[in-house]
Image (cartoon, rainbow, N blue to C red; front, top):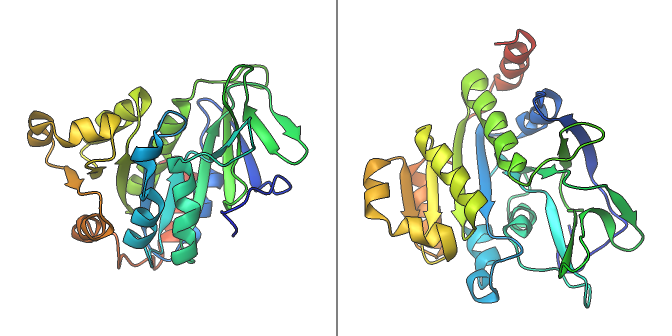
Length: 270
């Protein structure tokens, strides 16, 4: 995978899902991972400052080196309209992890907020309003991507991404005995919604302290942390993040026999 330069000729396998439908076939792609752990990465995208993004890629890539479970992320890439540069975003993290964790399976979820456009040299554009500083495209360096829409004629809001990811994680946890962890870095109002909903479910959440904006604020909110013991804080170092993930058992979860179990449970409508 080449994440240093953008290649607009590459588009991953695409799945389409109408809002309210299940993501069974797409979710089953995750079960090819050797370990029964799914990491959901959320946080800052277009509004993240360069200072907050500094060191972000190496932080995650080193912390998750050797990880062999599944990774869910917002499967877009942001390209500046002026100069065509790849902008810093948490959506660039999973493909950087993949370089140091080749057995990990990375899948993206993208809301179809407007009409799709295939632009030569750029790729599949999912959002590129006039006046915006960047275009959002389907990230080329992922195994597969799920496009979520209300219907053929109607798109959805951006927060549909995290809601679909919550559903996928719930199915994996309920029907296949997978572990999960949400890692949040930076982010705004939609990221906060995902953190709060995940925390309320009692699932593990890791906030990267010092990453800025919503994640940084919640990482320093002692009342929130005391009310949610399933929410842990990692410092903005690979050693700290890897240590917290190790406590949560992100490594060493055997996948023996889980693929057929998951498929059977979903087929039975469990």
